[in-house]
Image 1 (cartoon, helix red, strand yellow):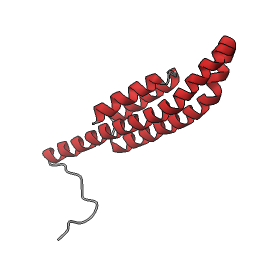
Image 2: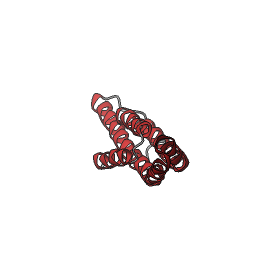
Image 3: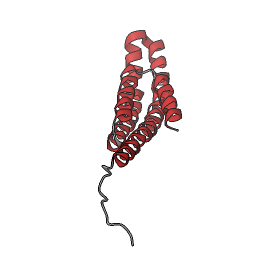
Amino acid sequence: AGKVTGTLGKGLAMLSMDDDFIRATNNANERAKKGHIGVGLLSGAEVVGRGILGGVKGLVADPLKGAKKGGVKGFFKGVGKGLLGVFAKPTAGIATCASGTLSSLENTANKVLKMKRKGEAPERVRPQRR
């Protein structure tokens, strides 16, 4: 499931046509893949936040950038890009969050299993049930 959501997240990030957002999404996903569950959740929350803020910001910024580059035609291209970003960025953030969280959960589980095999199992936080 993590690979499917990761691919979906990358595709949606590409659809946003925002190089900074694509780079941030990829960086957060790489951090989550290498870390434990806490890192995955934190990276995921960061990407979702960037997606929501980036989508809303793009509604205003993209038409203005387009107008500076291409006049009226550029303005309308920017409106289209901004509207697409409102959908694509938060959705990509959610998909990337799910992917990173699943990958980091797998890392955590593998580490605990490895510790158990070596006889270094982590201590229980609460006492065993009777």
